Amino acid sequence: METMTGSPVKLTAGAIEEVKRLMSEPGFDSNSYLRVGVKGGGCSGLSYVLGFDAKEADDEVYEIEGIPVVMKSAHGIYLFGMQVDFQDGLNARGFVFNNPNASSTCGCGSSFAV
Image (cartoon, rainbow, N blue to C red; front, side):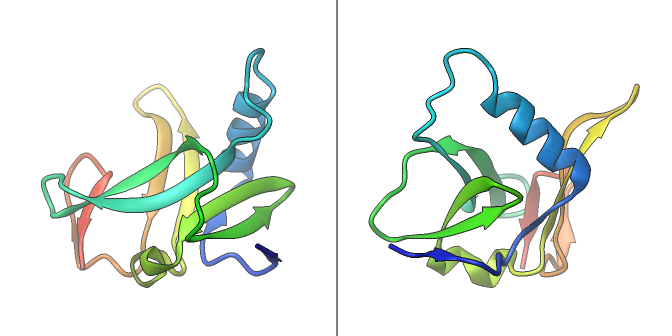
């Protein structure tokens, strides 16, 4: 499958830095892709998926700042225009999802409804 140039999801500089840090850890499988997606569940109906995974036959492949990213094409309607950030503060540490398609979110920030 050919790599697409325009990704439907954006990573902030903080997210890019953290993902690249994780990719440089000893034992990281260099054949892994960063998977961005959704799954059913969570307190608002859908939850975000963000993690390293193998590419599957029905994945779309993108590259963001040298990071190989995979996403199911069916997830694009939920994620198009979403921005993933990484917060590293005293009160919050972790990835944050800013999704313009979400009609509502829950307090944890990892679950949403459309």
